[in-house]
Image (cartoon, rainbow over the protein chains, first blue to last red):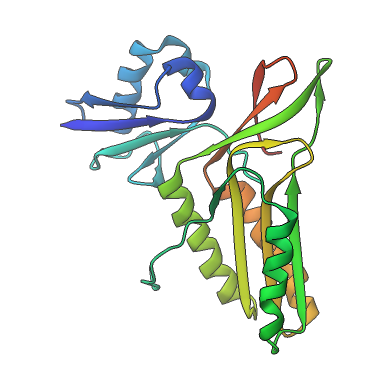
Length: 77
Length: 148
């Protein structure tokens, strides 16, 4: 399945892009993260949350949506 | 979600001006059931970090999720508190030190409500809304702001 991954804030300093589409054959969020860690080594050292279809999820959540966002600590206000 | 009204965007490009804030207050003069307003203004601080001074913050957001979160905060504030109206505006893009980046405006018939409601709303915004801030230093280097 094709998944769009969105990167925000300090994570874009690592990925150098804000969005990409990946072909993903796994089932869980942690599997997608492993794929991304292979692609971006230093991503693993960063603190971030994962949102699926705009809701926060954890590593053991099944991937059902087409939009995943990696969200570093919030800084609104 | 109970409310199917279309969500209006909370985001404004650049700083929130004092004219805009003043005009918002003016617009409430026709709502005469209101007895108390309370306003929170977030201002960009010129923090000094390792000898360098922050000259601006560049705000970005996961806008769809952020607008959804603002909407949830609004709904829950109306449920918890007896508010007549409530407005939230947050900047995107560059806001210089000393300029306003967040404007929260709550109104109620009575004063006690607006003090509690405003604190609740501002804390929820800081904790739950995916907004990101790049602190730009005078030498154009940067670091990423984190809410404490």
